[in-house]
Length: 473
Image (cartoon, rainbow, N blue to C red; front, side):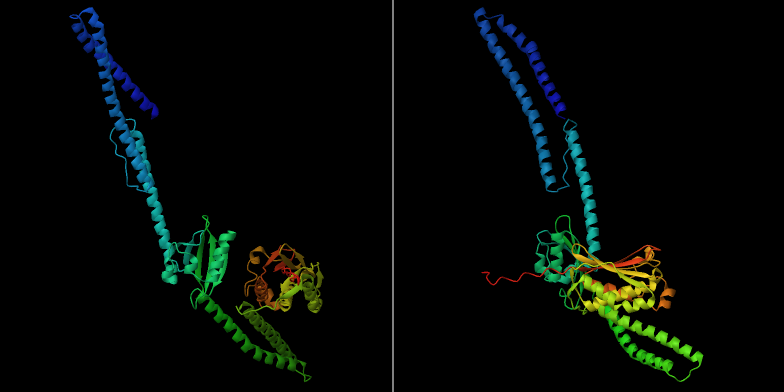
């Protein structure tokens, strides 16, 4: 564009020179010739100089006038472009540049108008998607609120506004709108650690329980989603109460039945062989039902929010040693040997009785399903901030599709085999809840034909703080 404008101005300058030359040739020179014929020689030179000066001034005035006219038109066009740019900076996408000609400035003006039209389309599409997203979020049952890096409310959906009432406003600090400490702690952790944080809130709305999901935003803020799980919690509590009550009611008659059957079998009074066989079957199934009720009671207990652990500092090596010693009789009767692969002296916070139940269920499970290996290994190792315990068998192993579900209630890999061995399908579920209550995690590793290894972790106990010196100021 610059080259075209320069060429245009150069052509205008050449045109002015031609105009001046033509004026000199056809106007001033004949005019001077007529006047000089009647003047004496001494005045001829002076008159010639004056006429030449006037002709130059007139040509210059004409050139300046044309230049001013061209410059004013260019300046007006540039002012229009500047005004257009300022309105565009204010997001006035309805503005357009007027097309006043077909000169060198018309092309960039057309290009700018086309660019604004494209921007207008893109902004309209973005606004349409934003409205769709807002409508989708407003239709959610979950309460959603976006937080700025400074902790102020950036946006909230209709559910959050209904729940918080008039307290929540855009630009207002979240702490002034939601005073629940669990929500604020999750938001703060998500912003500081730049990772998704989870929690539960029970004081946000009286009588309601919420699951908290706080995720960091790329801008530095956080997105908080509150899911109302009150009905789920009530249903879960009803289920736990029902299981506990039914198990309690069943345990007494089952104990009585088991006691009477054992008395009949052990009685010296001779019984027909068929009757003794039937009594044996009754005793076997009664024992199985007794164990099922005990496991149901244990599961209801560890799943309850009121479940408390008697945590105390314990050495990992002592926990492994106690587990092997307490289960030595059961292992010996099964013909399987149990070995210790070693354990560190690291201190963990654990409930010894709960840990005995964890090791007991895992070792009994290894005996039932890994008996073919004739060997069980129990051990532990210290990692960075946890101690990892393991119970390994050398049986047929577990297929990979079952590894993610074996800790579910009543999940069985081989239902027929489980019935024969008397399993309830609750042992691993109980173990999982106990480990989670300790702040650890549990998983299984296996390869078909090479046995299975169950691993769980317990956090290492923090070092005790040094007592203050009596001489400290």
